[in-house]
Amino acid sequence: MKPDFYEKRTQKLLLSGYPVQLTTVDCTTPDAPVIYWHWHDELEFLYIQQGQAYITCDEDNITVSTGDVFFINQAVRHFITPAGADGVIFSSVVVHPSFLLGIGQLELESKYINPITADRSTSHLHITAGDSLHRLFLPHLQQLIALNENCPPGYELLSKACILQMWYLLYSHLPAPADAVSSLSARTVNQDAQRTKQAVRYIQEHFMEPVTLDDIAGSILVSKSECCRCFKRTIGLSPVEYLMKYRIIESTKFMHRKTHDSIAEIAGSVGFNNISYFNKVFKKFMNCTPTQYRQSLRKEIAPPFSSPV
Image 1 (tube, helix red, strand yellow):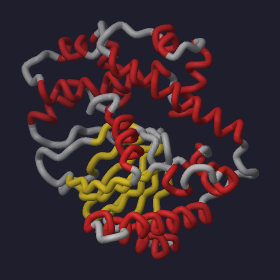
Image 2 (cartoon, rainbow, N blue to C red; image 1 turned 90 degrees about the horizontal axis):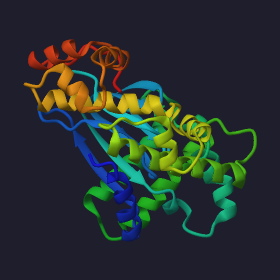
Image 3 (tube, rainbow, N blue to C red; image 1 turned 90 degrees about the vertical axis):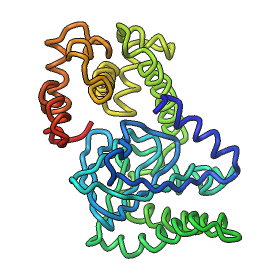
Image 4 (cartoon, rainbow, N blue to C red; image 1 turned 135 degrees about the horizontal axis):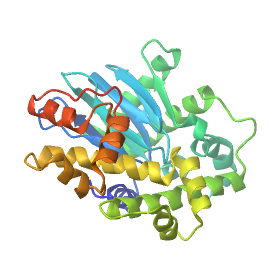
């Protein structure tokens, strides 16, 4: 997926006047899509219709099962992959925060929206069938999905009502910050997110080249220390850690596509000039060596790693 896919999606949704999008993802087929690390300006609500999946939000790994509901906050880096041999089917509804209250409702936004969107401790929420919140939340999400599948007259208004009901439940049940988020801290979070997104775009466009921390910081016109702080505050990784993870993810794509290339050639293709270091970093993130990963592909079984990246 191109680095600017989600940014273009956001622009398209905002221009449409109805910044809500429903997608049903079927990962039960051999050519099932893989949802790699990404984040976006939209809030995301997931409903697991069938099977199990791993959802990784920043550094938290969560297993979700049939019937579960999962909320992912704005600008939270996440990754989704099937957890079992039978795959997973889930519905995803993304909503731009501007749709919740509209423009100009600054007092209500400060009271009800910012305390969640600008608080990194509420990056995600897993609601299982045994949770008391589940029976309250699920009917609204199911109605929202049905409305956007069938699009009856006035479905946009009814969808907004569903989303506001879900947001009220989130607001009521998530741990609240000690005080409402100040406009200053909200601006800081937004600035961090924008800088980090721009730097990530630079990494994704240049990862095959020799990339240094100086290069990454220079791409967003800040010092190296400020660049590191932005990354840490936004996604919990340093810029170099993100670069290494991204290169490893790309190397797995190369192994799928370039079955005749050697491990050394693939390592070089994703920016590693030292095969030993590539092996070390690969094992750190994938919990197996590149050779073991390739062998697992040839046997058409899942690679032996404990948590997706």
